[in-house]
Image 1 (cartoon, chains in turn blue, green):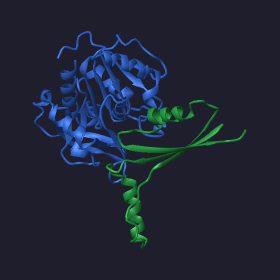
Image 2 (cartoon, helix red, strand yellow; image 1 turned 180 degrees about the vertical axis):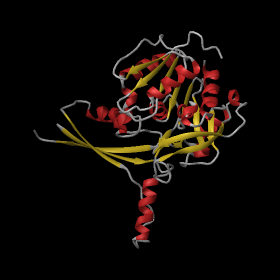
Image 3 (cartoon, rainbow over the protein chains, first blue to last red; image 1 turned 30 degrees about the horizontal axis):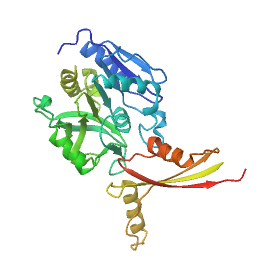
Image 4 (cartoon, each protein chain N blue to C red; image 1 turned 90 degrees about the vertical axis):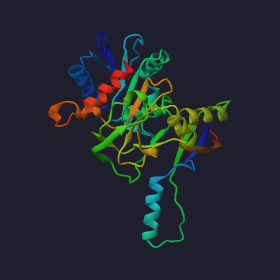
Length: 222
Length: 82
């Protein structure tokens, strides 16, 4: 992994609460200088090699999670970044925003049992070839009410055939179709996932499986 | 001025966890005749005079109010006398 001269940007929306977590982790553990970008400003799409949409909430998540965030100014710059085939990671609310923005297929609806889930879940690799060495079960925190991933049968088949499933839950916590925990865009440069690897990277949090997951993601994207 | 009523429901193919919970509650309350419950949204808009009101409403629904992956909608446009 060559992280030299790589710069990352994390977009903060009103309600984001994992923005500084992922910034800290990218800087401390992956040595990637990471800037926090305010949702209300556009930015130069040439500036960042990687953009992250963090977990938390955005604009109260009124209407549907991520539905309003998608229209923010910073997202318009993100669309320009994406047009250049540059990578984006969306975690939790970030994944919801990417789906609402149609940068990833599908939608995230209420968990099947209607409960907010806040616990570690066992995560395993999906069918994307670049995650083939992730052979263990990784314990990664989730914290969401709307993590129940939905796509139609046709799109599901596409995701399977094109090896665009990033991660599966080993035990399905929220009703997601096909146990899907994370997916990739067609060009495989945009990754969305509900679990929070950034919350399980620093040993001070008592768990470090997230480091392995984030390293695999960054190795692929950068 | 128009009052626009937008009715948003989940696609039939999409599972509705809230509807299922309410269905179970109704069964517990001894209404076994209730066979299904689906929960949607009702949104009202008040829109100024607009020559393309129909087009505007469709655009608003498609762009923001409705996610076509999981939802369908219908609307009523009611002219209001000023």
